[in-house]
Image 1: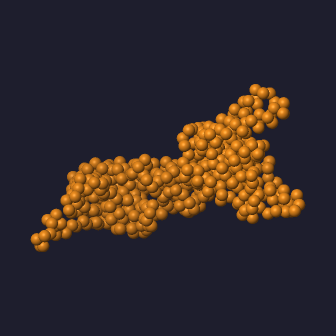
Image 2: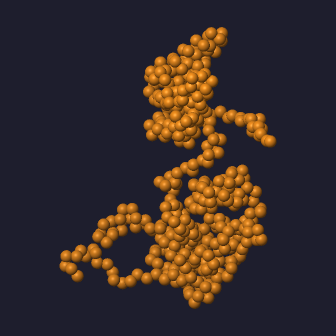
Image 3: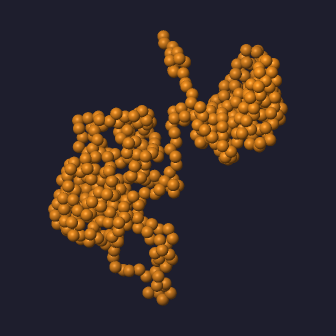
Length: 473
């Protein structure tokens, strides 16, 4: 030994050994089978006896089969939500309905992939519902759900085996899971009893004597993953593994200890709504809280706006963002004065006029953000005749309208409310003057935006049959 070497770096030369044995003699499991009896029979067939400290790892599938967690798909009537989601993920709607029943939320989805939070807390594909290694009917329509309570099942099996053998063992139920940032599946513990499923090493010294500050080891997952190497994933038929020599202290842990609470999960975000959901749920919101809207979010919705199509790709839209109270008030007063003049000439009752002016003023000034949307003809094509000039102007209007729709949808997707006020069309000169906008800008609308103070008013859409004419022949 080098005399200068720190004693803290001297480690034991004794080998660390753990032995994993896939038990033989396991029959095809059927509903109602006694799992403890099957385990004891497999131990005998493998010339093994249980010892204190042993860990038995049991495949989820045989537990689910013994608990009769089978569901025939032809008994399932899918909900409307399941039908919609099934189209998006390219799966059987009946299977999707089962997945939704077993889940608390859809975490992510795309074609051929459906990741959910299972009611047990597990974030996994298809709520763990499987059709492989399941005796199927002629229509291949039998699915197998996860056990009702894997932790409780582990505790029951542990107690039954203790009663038969006297040995104090740990039980793990494992399943194959994918991982968010890694390809391929690995075995994980979905149930555990008799060991610390989550081993807390905080405070223990490292090789240099430094105390560990945050190290927790998913011990049950590591054992489950090692056992999966012997169990296999296809036709191996080795659903019970005996692990001996794994260092662990007997404890009343559970696989539930391994589930990270959602409130501290930095990687899970709220599921994004589908395009159809986004369109159907958007409402015109006219009342907002006083919570500020960040510059980043404003930039985000404006970037969505400028991704709209436009004639000749000339992008005729222009935006003036008002966050300052004085600017919003100046605009609201100027528009209100013009509204008062116009309505007075119409002969409307002064009381009604003042109510409408006050309502318009409040909508603009109470919104955290007001965006004046204008168009410009500067880059559009010029024609010598009025007919084509008018058509070119209409194309600029269409492009600007599409930009406004993008903006409204982006605001909704960001959790904001928004609404269009078309008043500037009646007083473009007033809006330009109030905000000192360039002379070439033609104000089209004011979009108010902020954190919603309510859900907006319900609305009715005409049936397609009222607005669509299918041309045939």
